[in-house]
Length: 199
Image 1: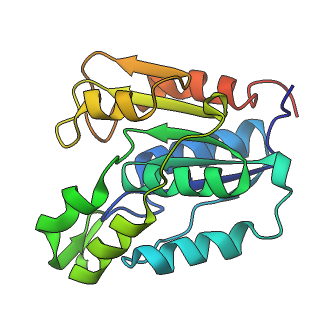
Image 2: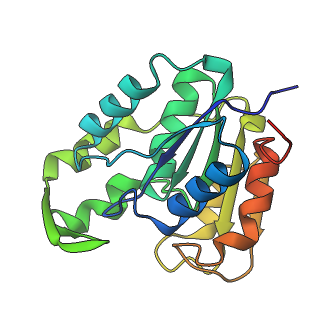
């Protein structure tokens, strides 16, 4: 049986940041209940290759069987790549299935979601990079827990469900892309990661 992770990585979505409400809620819960767990939520650069390299460097010294990754939207896509590369467990929150397709219309200058004064350029080459990064298959689906909202206004829940078919899944009636009712689903996430037991 898998142990609870000693290290936990959160990967935010496109235009998001470590100030994501979900990330802050998780961080606060860990601080209060599981301070023994090493937490990281890096600010990811807009370049997918740079983001993936940053994540790979971050987890390079982490114990392979004792860390897990949580990813939301584009972060869920990255989390899948990390899980397939390392064998770690992954929680995916409304994960992007085909970000190259979905983000092609966003090439150009963008603003950060949590601070409109922060601007960055999303380049056409980044779309190509996302297209080449897509993992072909999901191996060991029991390592994944997909939290998918039927009310997601940006991504198709049917496509997400099909992509992670066979994985443990929480399919939510309603809600939205940002999972504004995140607190309702946090216990299920913690249970999957076995973090709801004392450290």
